[in-house]
Amino acid sequence: MGRYQSYSDDFYVNMNLNTEMELPHSRETVLHYFEQVKKHYPTMRNFHSRERGEFVLEEDKDRGDYRWTSIESRRVCSGFVNPPSVEEALKQHALVLDLVPYVLSVSPLDCESLNVMYGFDFNYRGNHNQLVLDALGVLPAFEKLPEIPGASILANEPSIQFALDEDCRVQCRLSIEPRTAAYHIRTKEFPEEQLSVYFTARRYGSLDGDETYVSAMGRLAEICREIVDGYVVENILRPLQQTIAIS
Image 1 (cartoon, rainbow, N blue to C red):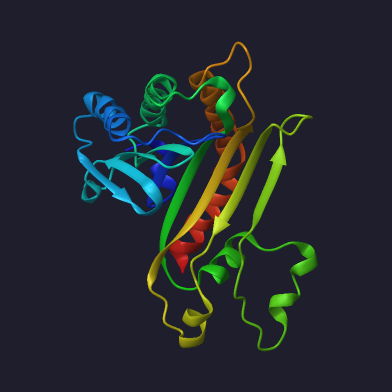
Image 2: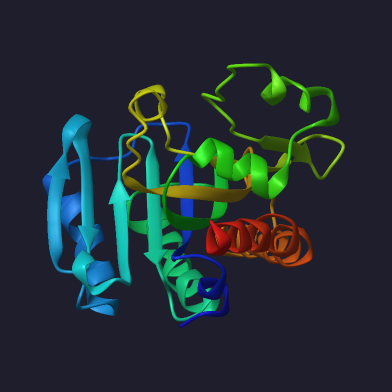
């Protein structure tokens, strides 16, 4: 088990490459791409198509930890749920990014954006909005609102986005996604759902002359590691984990 999984019920590392132009979707090209991935990871044998021309190759999900990759009209994705280590997930993403220039004809000019995301899911049967309030609080300007007589919080989805350079080409986003709806609050019936915490590092625009998709991803992954380790674990994940434990 990777160290991040001790902070949540599920942990995953995803990579998305968004392109400016449409990706090739001929039968031969799509199958060749997935066959190359399967050569490196033979247990990725579940291939299927979804709506709007999305194709997916993945491992068996009932294992609890599994790899997947997909092709959409203008996006290539790769993910690893509950990886043994972040490095193992990044190795898979690097394989995908090594393949796309040659198999899918994605040039360094064709990059609309590239991102790496760390995701953390917490299983919780209860009011997610109240859980986030109890664990993390709210902005001082909002503190009195939950005290209004009869008030019920219907949405509490903290998020912040910031840039790491003057041109705003490298951006980060931290967001929390509760899954409690007004229906659950009205009926007071709360199914066990997953509360999600996402941290994403994204860079926009074509690659620079000395960059490759793999090297660009490596820098984004380093940003994720530094901010998750330096801030997200202690200020977001642990408080949520502790509040769930005593609920």
